[in-house]
Length: 484
Ligand code: ADP
Ligand code: MG
Image (tube, rainbow, N blue to C red; front, side, top):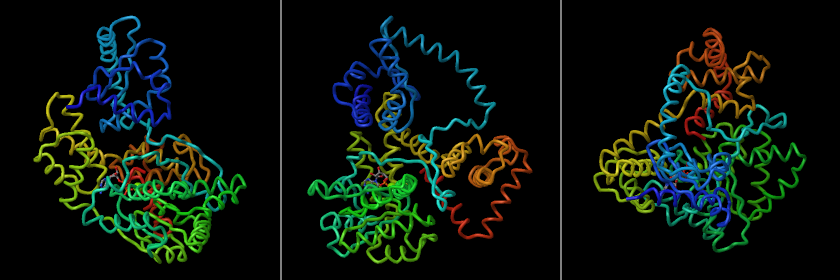
């Protein structure tokens, strides 16, 4: 069974990658740090002196939190405890007593404030001026895909639902633009392995041809980069970068639909590459025919190559994936537990991984081998987490990001067109996605319930009169639900 030491060692590997630290720096700050106590919501670390405790508290807490969550499958508080003045045990006792003292008033406060607004789901909040055509639809968050060494062909478990996608991806990596699969278009619901396959193509090709110039970009980032290039008056450099690629991979291309100048630019990039015999690979959450706001000329190009979908895995594939993931996480899972997980987690491979990690952590905390009771709790948590993922706070933060309007303004009495419109949309989405009474939404946004009702009606009217607007709203809902 995994112990604290192993958990922390695994987390440190990710931490080093995340921080980009040398071994020396890692050792300097984290070498003597020991994970001493792990409860179901807190990790208490021993630190050698107050100075390091201070540095860790001010600089690395969030990073440590993130890598611990990656290993455990759920978030814990990170509490470093310095042993400069006293032993770990007595300092821990002090800390826990203090926490208990503080807990009571905190709980009362949380209850009074039924919808706490603090929300860390969006980290970056860059807001930038955009070109006219784009201004209403700009996404300003930027999530780089990061380094994911496990996304290889070897680690991809193949079954009926993903066989064609896997095979075509492999073929393209072996023989770019040579196999009649250009462009290759993969689509499917979230969490079914599209990004995994795109990474695998990249890794496979670069391992054999390190000089091959592959550009891997998310649809969203392509758009942001283009906006930035236009704002900085550097469209030529942008164009050169993309049009000199040997292979272009765009993950989640659906983001560019409906954005005129982005589609225009992408169209020319696409044609230039295609005509020079370069491979293009695209992924999307739906097939081209269902991308309603996609320009016709782009749609016909997307359809001119090979289109394949990835469906949700059947039971056999789910169990195979479970076995593979369990073994790569180094956990022993009894057969009845494997079957239980396989039967209950159906739609999303990402959840399978989450449930395994959660089970491991539960078993560890209770000092037991993994059993059915851990499996039941884990499945329940993973499934309800998905269902509860949408909160008013998340919606507000999302709308704020999406439209570049600060949350304070959405909640303020300001009436400029942009602000009012984002407010109507936020209200509509909260009403639609969260089971929350009008009066409570009003409280959240400092308004009475009749104003809230008229926001809802305003959006309903716009939806009725404009299919394009309806599409935008549906797109927003999809994005919020998928947590992107
Ligand atoms: P998508 O891009 O379709 O939303 P991802 O590629 O991000 O999905 O996959 C979600 C998670 O599930 C990743 O951790 C990925 O490695 C894993 N995954 C999905 N399908 C498979 C598979 N067939 N075999 C192994 N892992 C998979
Ligand atoms: Mg993806």
